[in-house]
Image (cartoon, rainbow, N blue to C red; front, side):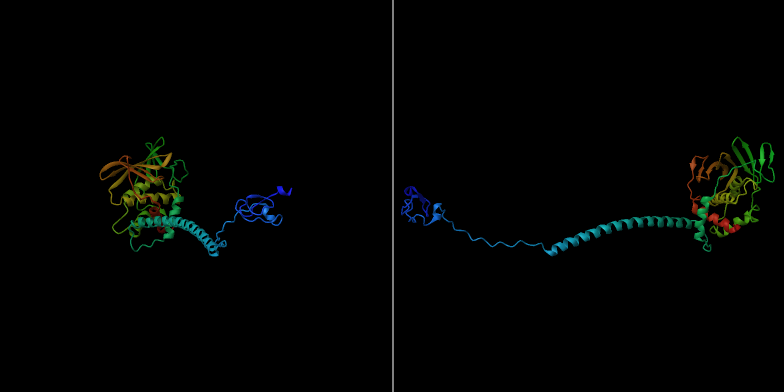
Length: 324
């Protein structure tokens, strides 16, 4: 029935009977039935709305920032690459510097020889001489059975060779120089040893220094033994070089080699019985290892006389004098 219909007050939303002219709650006039359809639902009083601030448009990424990031990335790559390059360059420089220092050290050591000012040494030839030295074999064996024009004389268990008299017991050979290796001995191209040593004194050594000739002959004779047994040019040169190193190192020392012992199974180690400063001593010299021991073989002697750059000087002198 129409009388049972209800509606809501458009002002306060209070439920009133249909056809009622005023709201019993707030006194507001009620619209006629069916005139305001929207009044079927209560209407909440509208609250005043605050005016919203205008929203700022979203910021777009700035181009300069992107460019900056790219530039920084490129710079980082360049810095890393430069660091790697510099590090590699430093290592290469250190290797180069090491070689330079080694070369300068050799030059300083060569200067210690105190060569005369007027001597002209070809450094290329000197370096070649160092390499040639490494190819020379300083080991030798005394082979009494080798073919030779003359058979060494044997008397009282002693074999007489060109330069030494040898007594052999088992593998031990005792050699005593017989004086036949001297200044008149001609080893190459009909040039004698006396002339060669004069050449060394005048063109290689500084003024006032001369080769100890007695020591030179005393060391060289047991190395060569016999002119027929030891005729290889390389062996003779190497033996002369070692004897020169000794005789130059002890140029002012009154020393004489009385006899020399070697083990025929290990002929690179020589045991010299010497008289030095009127006292007897035993020197152990290993020409392969280039070591020298004095005081009956108990005290190692420290010297640079067997260094390649020094031996190369003697090698060059031999080659130039004898025209080899």
